[in-house]
Image (cartoon, rainbow, N blue to C red; front, side, top):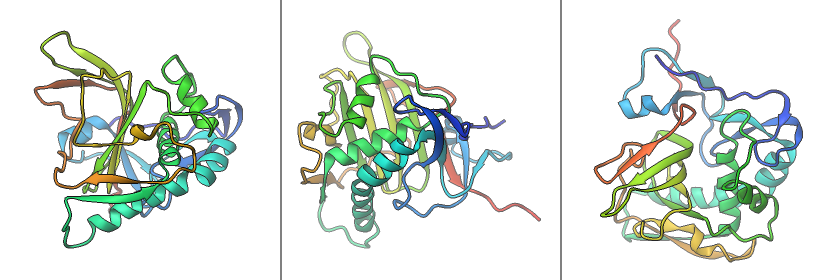
Length: 271
């Protein structure tokens, strides 16, 4: 039986990002402009792990995956106006390259503004889940970073991305990843967002011994200014498994709640 995912918060409530009470608006994840917004069937991530659609339909969302959880300022004033344009440009430049028939180079350089891309990413994942405005010692610095463009990315956060040439969309926050080592189990929190053509992973307090050298680390540019523009290298010679990190291997375990989601294009209803 499919778990129904709640995406529509109240018309008035507390913003998931800033915590202020007022009118709430719908946030699209990924933002409009990254991909064609079509009707989606949204399921708990367990459906994704089964690698097949259930007979019953999940939550139907018109025009893409969206959550009514953000105030107008966070959603349209900051995300839509200030941060999303750089995110959309970064995503679409990678998509254009992956759609070409021939890939001559093992890597692609994309000119972008990392500080705007990162803020867009964090804002959209933070929008996931109705009534998720409460902050703690881990996410309070994230809120301050998002709202203040002069702040640097907190040292506790690392942001990774890699090419994702697959159709499905996966989104999860507040996951616990445990890495098996020669010593004690290394445990830290992660968020992730995956859709064509890119996957992102946010780690919180990741041990320095855990490395992801084959991914692009956007947090390497945590000290840049909000409008500093650089070329970011995306490696294409190693495509990561489409179900990583959702399906653990022998090296790690992953725990997540029922609000972790996957979505697929909505099936046509029988007449």
